[in-house]
Image 1 (spheres, rainbow, N blue to C red):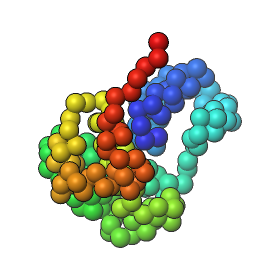
Image 2 (image 1 turned 180 degrees about the vertical axis):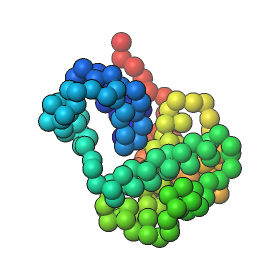
Image 3 (image 1 turned 135 degrees about the vertical axis):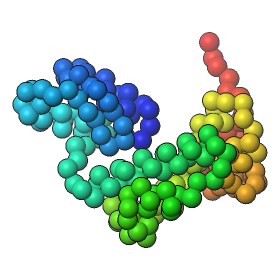
Image 4 (image 1 turned 90 degrees about the horizontal axis):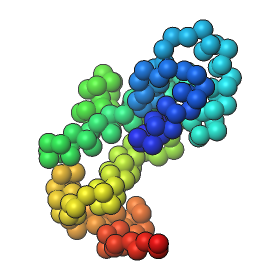
Length: 175
């Protein structure tokens, strides 16, 4: 679970199964203790699979989910403070492990380097900000720690195959 839509869908699905959801965040759903849980475990696994998620018990997977959570936190911190986040320090500091070890674990499990994942998440945030706010690409570039608007524009094109201009064109609605 990385986005708000994922947590929303998961909460709706668990509630539909009769669970009281106390909290949901990346890689974790906390439900009120119930005797039904062990009986409904198969149903939960099926529901998760149906929405593209899975129940995880693997310690490495928990670490990977925590890394993803910290990437999201780092991006949010950058947006709130306007100061660049040093992801290597944030991730290794919070997980109390060597960054290179964590990066290798992430790459082997996810099939993408941690650095590319961070770039991907930042680009997704840029697209979201362009669609949902009146912020300029220059403002977004500054907030997310890019050296210039031109560099961010090139990153957008490289990772989405769509130019900044295309992303900012108003969409016409047919009524």
